[in-house]
Amino acid sequence: MHVPEDRTFEFGDFTLVPRERQLLHDGRPVHLTAKAFDLLLALVRRAGHLVSKDELLREVWPDTFVEEVNLTVNISTLRKVLDRARDGDGMIKTVPKCGYRFVTPVTLRDAAVVCGREARQLARQVTQNADAYRAYLQGRHDWNQRSEEGLRRAIERFQDAVEMDPRFALAYSGLADCHATLGYLNHMSPAEAFPAARRCATKALELDASLAESHASMAFVKLYFDWDWSGADADFQRAIALDPNYAPTHQWYSIYLLAAGRVSEALHQIQLARQHDSLSVPINSDLGFHYYYTGRYDEAVKQLKFVLEMNKDYVPAHLWLGRAYQELGRFEAALAEFRRVEESLPEWPVSIAARGFVAGIAGRTDEARQILADLKGLAARKFVTPYGVALVHAGLGENDATFAWLNKAFDERAHWLVWLRLDPRWNGLRRDPRFSDLVSRMRFPP
Image (cartoon, rainbow, N blue to C red; front, side, top):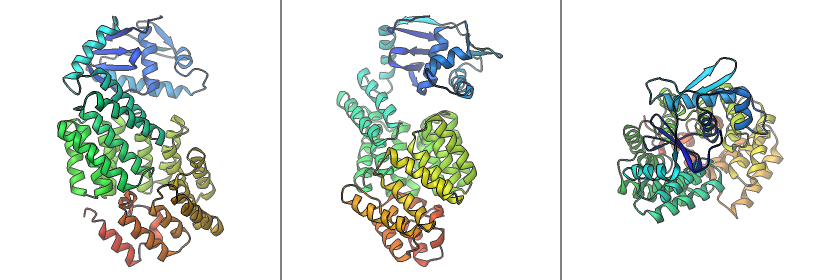
């Protein structure tokens, strides 16, 4: 069924706008991954008719071999999104051994009329400028890629949005998240990234303190830069109270809870995040992150391999997979993952330092020392976290140099220090009084 791009589909309380690649529920945007959106569109276009599994695989994953499980997982995601608004009255029916049928009546509308109406509904919530909102959605898409290029592109999108609507609080929250993520991934120094993130989060809260996104953005800064444990906890809880369906709040709160030592609560929060956005690559990667920091390395490996089946180029998953391998004593596999990261990010100090630590503990002293020299040269051109330099010295067993660099990391407020108690790479130092002193200075919650 061919449908012109200037048409939209209405079914139940939903509106599907192909031209804008948007699904709206009661006028509010619903997050879908690109493949879930394509799958829904394929089914809605053939509403009332059986669509075979082979047809869907060919249309949604053209020129790509994928396992049928990808189709099953995306169908499950769509059902969660669509059926929670209909008391379980399923819109997508399974035809056993054949395929699927979209069974809800669908109405075609003119896109200009529909988008105008939905934009007016959105205006009561976030902005009166439809173009600003569109720029915001594009920014969130780019931010979700977590690459340096994507983050800087997202900043441009969010800046466009606030130029069109200076009172657009959500766009300021997006700017905060971009700056914080640039700091988190060490593409910028903490002193440059996190204060910028705080300014944007503060502006978002001044404009609209009722938005969960703004409180979550501020909580992230309080956790990773201010080390304000009680303040971060309060902001995360406020964000959840305002919007329990906003997945990033649960994702980031799980990180806070894990660093704070509240392991079972942390697992619950990352599982909630995945329930709200089951195909999010960052959220699924952070579940592997959780398994790593709780010593469940085999489970971390399984989870991170699952993430890489979703997106084989997702750098953080390769990084954490390498770290899980190193704790299992699989040094060659760990080094291979870190080199895979460096193929995508040739001068990323985080993966270079991770490789240096493994080289050190594996007895490859010359390689580890060369990595120290490489990091020193790199520091003349870009930010290199002292935490990473300390790790390479620790791998070499050079404790005095390790603590000198860890103290420098503390002075620079390196966000990695929130993991000081849990990072297994420091296990050889934990009996040293200097390590206990550093932990006490972090003022972790009791």
